[in-house]
Image 1 (cartoon, rainbow, N blue to C red):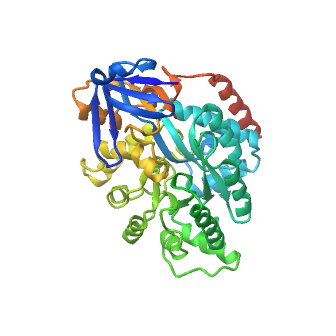
Image 2: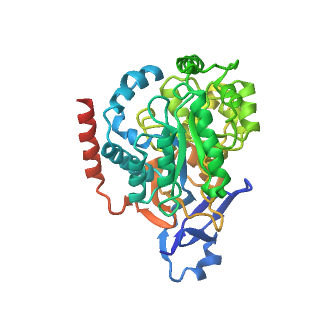
Image 3: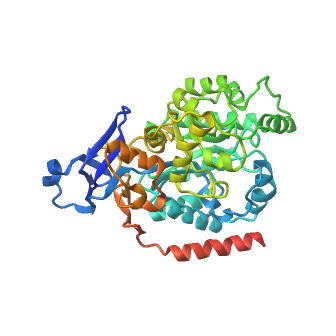
Length: 448
């Protein structure tokens, strides 16, 4: 399908970090790529043979990128709220997960993909059980995503994760990738981290950049992480190094580099931040989930200034409790202004960057997060004809609306890999009410 996308204005960062505003834009899409972007008056002669999408009320932006989530946890939304992380995870979520099966995860992920697309997200990095089921759900709808090849000491092995990599990495027209997902330093021993990292390095030596495998973990999320990590390694007879933080631990065993996606990064000192920046670690910040679980807040202003490969995520819908990335965008843009008593910190353009091209860098996925010509055609359009998005005085004013006023329900059209997945608020060939009913049935069964 060849598409021509129209709007009132297009906003995007290019790969050189230049912010672009294109008035009365036209985006030409052929196969899975953006062929050209410019003013309608200059490109209109090129639209013959293209299906036209959009109108003069649309804001055109790159598809939003959710850098850390657990999509199938839609199954547990609202079941264990107002609890600290340790109790929420160990006394509620983990016991429920023991009864999950592959079909449950497929249904939960499918609903998570639907929710994501409805809110303008075109790519998500999901860490969860039964990753083949998540891959199936993503591929069925046409979503772009990373699934987990999980390694947790005493539960899943590296050899099992390698099977997932071989089966799914760079499949579904290269829209599905796999991460080696080592849950955290307090659930995975140093030995398992090292073995997994060595496999990853050898794998990456034999492939090109877009086929590169990444390691995905929760890092410095809990204040108890070091104590629990020491206990875990002691249980397996592994000598623990003389380090003070989880970041120092991963650096000590040699895996703190650009192969790593580190989620959360809350409990960091200045040395940790400098290490993450100098080692080009990829980071997903998830401030809304952190706030809800009472986990303290990550040093995001410092991270933005010192770390290049930074994106944002929602975390799972059981701990946020939404996959609407606009909620995280607004919270991030507002929270630190109040906390630091500084209204100029984390500006609208910075949070827009984190949600788009920043996410591309965090996930090492070249070609998404921008509207540059020759980039992959992952595009979200937002209906600006809304009371809460009025007035629209100038370019900067509309960018401010993105950070402070927009909601997922304002999304009108979503294009992924050149295909129109959602048009005028409706995802084609999906009975959403039926999917909701199926998830309700699964959750009731799990609770029993």
